[in-house]
Image (cartoon, rainbow, N blue to C red; front, side, top):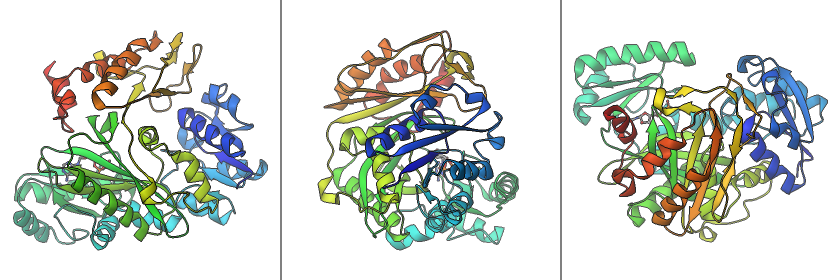
Length: 448
Ligand code: ADP
């Protein structure tokens, strides 16, 4: 096991990693920007090092400074968390070259699964269900038009290096394919310096279904079942739940197994999430693979009893996965609510500033992962998530009831948060009956 892990992240995920390391008897070094000086999570680290000014590009994204901090603190491994450098294969490579174990996949596995065109090719070979579309990158626009006509409109043009919903264009006829390819290419070039685009079928009504996978360095990979993250606004997840409600058990098992097969075929070690869209007939289509621990991992921890962050650290240190597929089963139902410092009544305006009141809920099946407390000043420089409320109960109905209770108890002020929106969504008949899709939150917000 490692002696000292450097955490190249901030906020709740830094705290989550500190807690996992502590249980493993591993010391922690937290790097931070000057905007995060005095951040409550830093008190829990064994050592802290300031790596620069507030802007992420001058601190949390500065590979040279993070490596220097790892050297001076004698860390033997680096945990990237999520966001920032977590899916940057160059960073993973620099860590390896500098003799620090990157807690995550090898740069090769990250590239193989992180590039969407490449990932789709691997998925096809592994038997993971993919969208009908172009086989690889679009070379010739007229060929793309012909393929669009074979699979039928609407279609979507997407960037191989895409992220955050950028570099995507929906096309409903031949002319839109022609302009969409050009626009997506330009946008992708500007955003990711990679103008490779591909085309696939576009689903009007879909649910977001994702499979949690864990792999080790000894050729093993297992899945920890799925999460449904269909409650989204502008591609940002708001509520996640596990298991996915109203899904045929046979189909569910098949797609989960195929996700583990895909990750295994890339010789992947660590936590990964294989994201799918599911149509009305419960067919699955691969969206992308996220090569890191995800924000919503705690709901999977709740229903499986497996500590995903701790297991990720263990496999990075060379241990074998301590369980096989048949050891993993689902118990009860879990939901996660992202508590964002945003005002839902004012178009989700970010709310930086002082948290004067902070009283989290408690009780059986209630977990709060948050780095915030009363007197904490939210800096304006980073994302607006200030905590996650994770609820576990025997059934989905009980989980909704328990969630309403806990959200009602949660006191944060005077800054506004997404708590009232969650309370509203939990009473929304479409959600309660699990007949919702990835656009229902936006439709609701537009209608009111
Ligand atoms: P990114 O990496 O930018 O997040 P994704 O491939 O995950 O890109 O797609 C982002 C979102 O765009 C999805 O969550 C979904 O809402 C929508 N989307 C992407 N591809 C399709 C598709 N083929 N059909 C319908 N919606 C899609």
